[in-house]
Image (cartoon, rainbow, N blue to C red; front, top):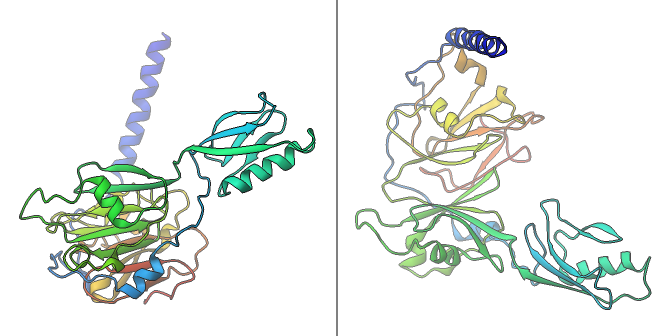
Length: 337
């Protein structure tokens, strides 16, 4: 009887969900207005200049700072009960007997040892504390695209771009018709930069061999790939391959849609190649009253702002066809209406 009731309730809930979904009509055919037209592949991509590269490049740290996942070795002389191995947790803490959780995130080894010693001074006279790093895990860079070993790569220090490309196995040309010409670096949810690999490889211009920051994402497409971008408050921000008749809603869906922090009334579609922007309330996609499910073009950016942003701003370093450098945020210039 209990199993029967469970099955009955499940069927009723499924019927209610299906009836609710049937009442929502989403336009399937992309609509085109003004600067937003049928998708066309651009043969030209503009790249960031060396001056902007220098602003984007991470500063070289003279000393290593502890980060999430680092394997640490704590030695308190003549106190074996306090000594041992630790892994720095996601919250930046390790737990030491007697003194409890200690936050060591972003400290140098000397600073961390000093902080632990200060706490131990409350219980011991002049304790001698040494802290070593057995495994460096904080300098992580994620690599995606046409590489032999995509995924998360670990480095002992913040790597330069060539370090990442060499480790990922992207140097060999697997297909003569699909040579490496460019690479995108994503920094957080709101920064993208395109780097000209021809200038780095062919001309040997080391200005393009920038130093990366921990948690940067490096994306290496084929020269034939066409790409659009979904950034901001979405589940999976990043670059997505442009497919024939790909629409605004298609790209947003691939990125997992707006997350719980999103301000869905002000979602914007940017077209850098034409210096155009269209603001699209998410609710309008679920209504027949407005047809705004535009077709996308190469280089388009969908940006979903967070709650509390009165205006969605953006800065384009070069207003040229193709995406070169972009920073979103409330502190940037106001988007054209």
